[in-house]
Image 1: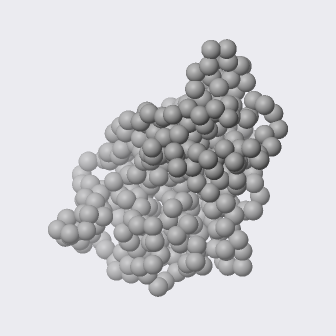
Image 2: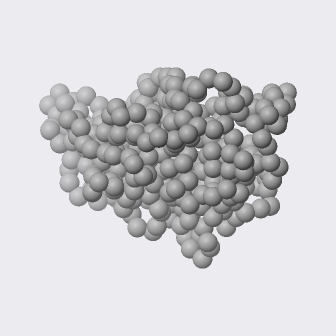
Image 3: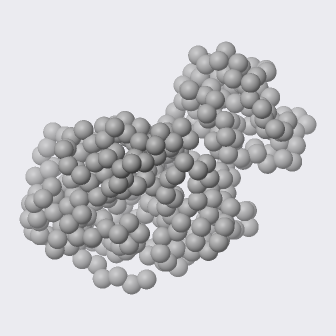
Length: 363
């Protein structure tokens, strides 16, 4: 797909004040002197966007491995912003809130959307209560789940809220959907990664348990040889981007996410997707947990549940009450760890958490 690159849309503004390219450069430079780190990061990115070079460097989240730097053209970032604008019907003058760190792709792309679509960009610290800073209504806001949870009383101040960056647990989804049932607020869940410049698919949230993702315009998907999702994002290139996400492709434009190949547990030839089990059982737990596999002489791996040491007894009581349906989905033990490790976006670092050391408790 072709797109003509331009640095600053003529309707771009920051909290109601219009900026042309020269004025924005002066403003961005002034942000570098701020004592607030999030404003320094914003100024740094704006200057990078306004610079003569055509590439922007971004860093992956590190949820499945060591964070790594990637480079994208500004044209690709602007093209992705245009696709998002089409999907959400964003038009010049719409007010959007940046409440994510601009060191990472989600925050950078919020800025690019404003610059490319002529939106009015409002900026808050990347805290858990971003809506507390303003008494206004936003047309579009992107948040991580922890921000969504803390912002539920104020969601009526938003027209469209996009949630991403970390898994959204069922209880929080239901709570948020119920909170806006009588409001003109729509909630959406994103699927994407740094390699695709954030989301390539969006799911509108309802009270239904099943979450179906719809692709952005021009995105193509297929299943690769490993049974994982492959993506062709023409705004980046014609090359195929291979993921480790296992999905159920429903048609050319829709799919259901099931889990990650990295985390699949092969127990006696039965492949278990821990994320699917976690989604089914999260209603029983009021504390963090996840399923994993540990080596077993006969089965290859056996299913276990991982919890913090302080929740061992409570976990034993909960597991005794759950109807697992099949013996393959019933954990054979409990692993206790000192703490759970997360990325900056609150994505669980499963392997690193287990790497801290654990104790095995039989059921």
